[in-house]
Length: 335
Image 1 (cartoon, helix red, strand yellow):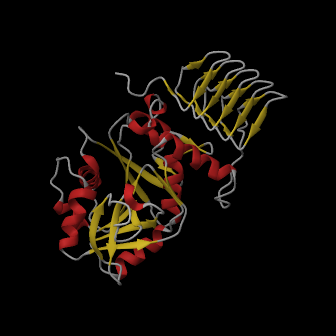
Image 2 (spheres, helix red, strand yellow):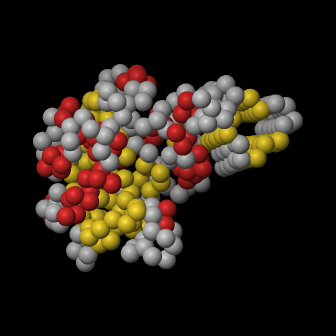
């Protein structure tokens, strides 16, 4: 048996207004919820049991998996009484599930084709207390950067280094393998960050390693990245995963144009409308003659409107003929 804790308790602030109605990991990528794609990849790597570390809006997760299974993996739930940050959530979920052996942790924002089994083997070969999946990025200045020695042992973390000063271009990709001993470093019931507090403690013990890979990886936590994760499927960047751009339960009228886009069940595109490089979620509607590009929609775009870079929440409307660029509606900063 191999167990994993998946962190899905966040508020999804960066994806508002979409996450006002749907928890971020329940948003679909290529018609399949992010959490389902994530758990399926864990299953391919040998994970048999997953604990969902829940906080904000736990009910949709429980309702989505009434038999407590996903992708052949057994699910259990640990609902935080209050936000505990990453390490606090891991400790809470691990305690709730009685985890007492090597386990995997996955950030619920991340979609990756990483071979989890390879990460676990790397971890065990080095007798590590913790192992972090790393990816190379072009500009590490926006990330926490990792410095490794020749054996893959992490020497230090550098948070958002100024351009040109980073010790490497390798960054934390949000999937870990941990020993139960790591839990002892996390105070129970307290708000603690594994990235800022726990991992630096393990560096001092010379027991934390990093494994870099060039596997597909994307953080879906921003609208532009969530959109890109969908486009990566329809444009064939993950050829082992199939995605029909237009779901069987979607309505695309004759004369409508849908290009490089995902149209979910319950979405509607009227005759004469054009949709390109966009995601239309359940409840989205694009009326006659409207043009939609580079957008994520849950609401209605009126006839003849012209929008690009729009993030439209559930129940929101773009008026007929309205022209919008790089707007979120409703305002994600509303009270």
